[in-house]
Every structure is written in C-alpha cells, then in structure tokens.
Picture 1 (cartoon, rainbow, N blue to C red):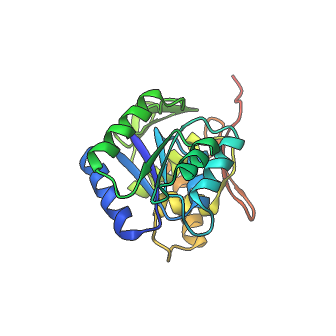
Picture 2 (cartoon, rainbow, N blue to C red; picture 1 turned 180 degrees about the vertical axis):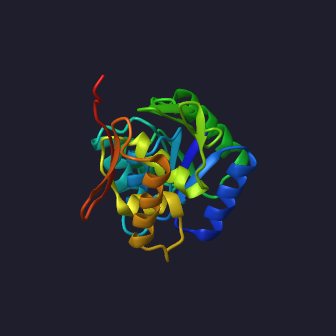
Picture 3 (spheres, helix red, strand yellow; picture 1 turned 90 degrees about the horizontal axis):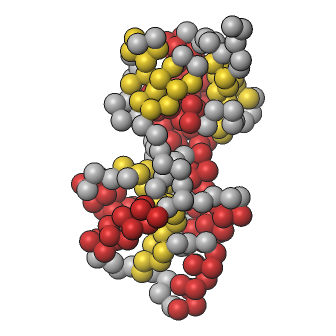
Length: 228
C-alpha cells in the first residue's frame, strides 16, 4: 500500500509516518494542502490522508479541488474537528472516511486497509515501459535491452516520477518536494544538474524518449514515435 500523508504537526507526522513504515506501508509526507494536491495529482496513491487545518491551503480545500479535477483515489480526513457538522462537511466535500484525533493506530490501519480495497484509483504497476526503458518500482531498477542502467536513488526517483507523468509538465516545486522531500536547502540548479546527469546516463534522447525543460515551469518526459 502507498499512502500520502498531509500533516503540519511535525510530532504527529513523524509518529504516523514511523508507524506506517513499520507496517510495510510506503508513505510520502507533506506539510500543507497545496503540496498534498500536487502530490496526489502527479503521483499514484492507494489513500490520501489529510489533516483539515494546515497552512497555505487547508486539507478540506485540497480535498475539494482534487474532486473538482476528477481525482478518484481514496481520501481520508484525519482531524481534531469532531462535530457532526464538520464530519458531514468533510464527507460532502469529497472525503471517503473521517477519523477524529486522538485516534488508535490499529483503527487507523484498519480504515486505511478498507479504503485501499475499495479505492477507485488505478493500481500502481510495479513495472512501466517507456520506449526501450523498463522501470521497476519494486526493485528500483531501470533496464534497457536487458541491461541494467546504474542510477543513484535520487536519479531513479526523478526518472520514475517523470515516466509516470509522461506527456505532462511536472513543476519544479513538485519534483523538488518528491525527490528531495523536506530538504529545503536544495536549489533549482541542483535539479538541473540531476537532469543533465540523468540524460547522460540514459543516453537521451533515445528511442523517442526525451526530457524537456519547460522554461519557468518544470520538466516533461515525452515519447515520440520513431521510424520503423
């Protein structure tokens, strides 16, 4: 199972992330609703778990925006707002389930499992093929013509993110958050350097696969038809 956690409380966020990982659940953790929206739109999660009250954009607002833009994955609101009116509002805005803080972790796990089973999101494929490249998420390997291409952890994350969003411009901010997480000192120049190294290791452009810098926005991986 893969979960997106949006929680601005560092203590609680760390605790929930630790417990999820301990139960063999992959987790990405962000600190506000705006980041949660970007991660959910550009990623692939079994469940998106959001606090209601967060800076920049509330979880309720992010939930509403996701549904307005056609997001079909499971969303769980995790919040201290416990009135009946708040619960009704959260569910009517698009949440599939609602858990009130404080909570028992065993119950939270059970709810996550239940949501994952009935989630409408497309099942995340372990292996994705683009051009002559085969990307295995489980083993974190990239193969080309049965030969493994040696990538660092971050290079793999970068390529995997672009591949799974091929044809779409992935904003720089989203890439930095997804690949470097909460490391706020990472600059946009670092991203450019990684893309340069990635192109070199993959010998791009190759077999119609290109990574294009969309100035002022981000990067897009494209697959163009090749001559027979």
